[in-house]
Image 1 (cartoon, rainbow, N blue to C red):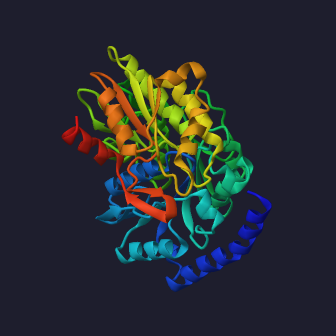
Image 2 (cartoon, one colour):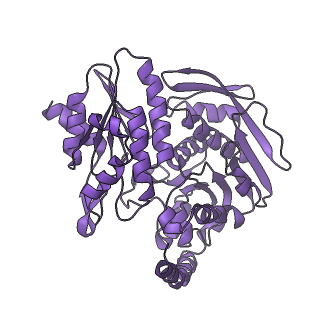
Image 3 (cartoon, rainbow, N blue to C red):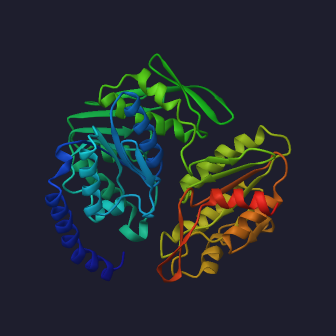
Amino acid sequence: MNFFEKIYQKILSPYHYFWALFSALVFGFPSKKIKVIGITGTKGKSTVVEFTEKIFEEAGYKVASFSSIKIKIGKKEKKNLFKMTMPGRWYIQKFLKDAIKSKCDYAILEVTSEGILQHRQKFINFEVAVFTNLSKEHIERHGSFENYRASKGKLFKENSNIHILNLDDKNVDYFLKFQAKKKIGFTLKENYKQKENIKIIQARILKEKDEKFEFQVNDTIFKLNLVGDFNVYNALASICIGLSQNIPLETSKKAIEKVKKVEGRMEIVIEKPFEVIVDYAHTPDSLEAVYKNLIQKKEEKENSRLICVLGAAGGGRDKWKRSKMGEIAGNYCDKIILTNEDPYDENPKEILNDIFSGIKKEQRKKVKKILDRKKAIKEALKLAKNNDIVIITGKGCEPWMCVKGGRKIPWDDREIVKEILKNDI
C-alpha cells in the first residue's frame, strides 16, 4: 500500500464506519437478537460455514448463512452472485434482520480482511469468532503480512465471548493473545502442550482411503466424504463451534457425514474415464495443498498424470504470488495449461507471463499458454487419458469472470467442463 493509498484509506475509513453505524441503526442492531458466528482465515472459510450449518440444523436449530458460495436463510437459499465473500454494511445488517424475521437461531458469516478494513464487521455482536489458518494473501491491499494478520485479529479483539482457534497454525499465538470468556483450540498433534485458559479438542486420524479421512475425537469416529487432509481441520473447526453451543459430538458426526461435497471446493465434476476436479485454490499455500493431495491419489492409480489448468487474478491483486504458483505447478503437475482467470483491467498475457516466470526452464516444455479459459479447459480434457486427473483451480463455483471495463461474464468452470464433454469431445 503506497502513500496515496494510505491517505485514501484514512479518508474512506470514517465513511465506512459511519455507513456501518447507519445500517445497524436502520435495521435495529439485529445481531443483539440472534447468535452470530464469524469465521475468518485465509482458507477453508466456506467449507467451515457449510459443515457448521449442517451441524446446527442436525441439532434442530434454524440457521442463516452467508458464504462466498451461497446465501441461505432457513430453507431458502440462493447463489452468492456478488463475487464478494463478505457483503457490504447495509446488506449484512439487512441479512441479519431477515434472518430474525425468519426466526433463525444462528447466523454464520465468513469474515474477510477486506471486510474488516471497511468496518463491515462493526456493530455485529459475534457469539463465536473462529480462526481457521493464515498464509500470505492480499499483501498489496494491506501493505504487509503483519497488517493483513492484524486485520483478521480485529474480529477477536473486538469480540470477547468465545474464540475457536486452529492450534496447529503457525500464527495461532497472535490470536491466542486476545481475551475471551471461553477459548477452544483444535489440533491433530498427539502431544499438544496444554495452554492456560483454553479447552483443547484433540483429534487423531485413524485411516485414509482415496484421500478421504476417518478421524476420532474422544470416543466419536468421524468419516469425511470430502477429499483432502485440510478438510479434517475444517471439520474440526465446525465440531468445536458445535461444542461451544453444547451440541454433542454424535450430532456433529451425523451432520458431517451427510456432507457429500462443497461446491467448487475439491469438487469432483467427472469421475470416469478420467477425473476432473474444480477447486477455488488461488494462493500458493492452498494450491500446494490441493496438488499434494492429488499426487497421493495419482500414485494409487496406474499410469496416471496430473493435468492442471491454472491462472491468477488481475487488477493488481497479489502479483507476488504468481511466479510462486507457477513454481508449485511446475513441481507437481505433468501437464500445465496457463489461462485467464479474472484479469479485470490488467493485460491477461502479462499475468500468464508472471506465472510462467516461476516455472523452471527444464519444466517449461510441459506448459501451454491458452488465454481463452474455455479453450484451455477443452485442451486439458483432450489431453486426459484413462486414470488421469485434471485439476482446474482459481475460480471454483464462482458465477462470473471479471474482465476489462468492469464487465462480468457469466461463468462456471463445472458447467464448462460438462458442456465440452457433451458437445466437443
